[in-house]
Amino acid sequence: MEAKGVMLLVFVVGLLIGVAGTYWYMQDYAEEQWQAGYVAGQSVTPTYETPASLSASFETGTFDLSSAVASDGSVSTETTVTDNLTIENTDESKVAKNVKILLYNPVTGKEGLHDNLETDATEVTITVGGVTYTLYHNGDYVTDGVTIGDLPAGAKIEPKLSVTFEKAVAGTFQDGQTYTCYLYIYQPDANYADVLSFTVST
Image 1 (tube, one colour):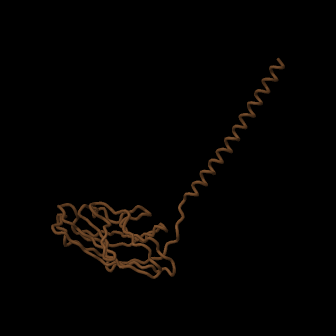
Image 2: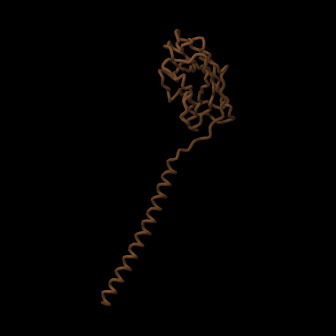
Image 3: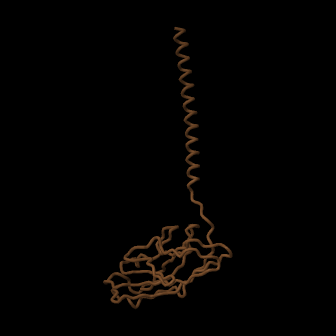
């Protein structure tokens, strides 16, 4: 009996030691895995540059298309209003790299047009260096926008933004409304967008 008791005691003690050892091993393993995951997460976090200082302004910032919209919200004649835009790098030395112009903010995901203007009859384009690019067409945003390229310190460009109402049936627009909209000047290397507001009147 005494021999059996001793053997049982040895077995219980061994079992406890084994459980404790397994517990501490798993704790260490879990800690190592957490640290590995943390370091891996840190390693893939993107690093962005400091953005260059840009100034942007419209000549008027007003796109009045009210004369094109009938009282029932239809448009009988395609009408376009254009405004001049100036974008300048006011930074003392920093180059604004790979500058893009969009109606969609890549940083926040915010869309630039008011919901009531997001129709198949609305078109927004921008003309840079004599070439016209589409920013919004057939109810869709061009989410990649228009790439302007590098803008050195002190340099400026003067694009033209155009808003067009194509022929549309009754109920497409709401007559007599003015909506605030937004254009975005995006620096991808800095993941930063300057926001420029304008109004569209129906």
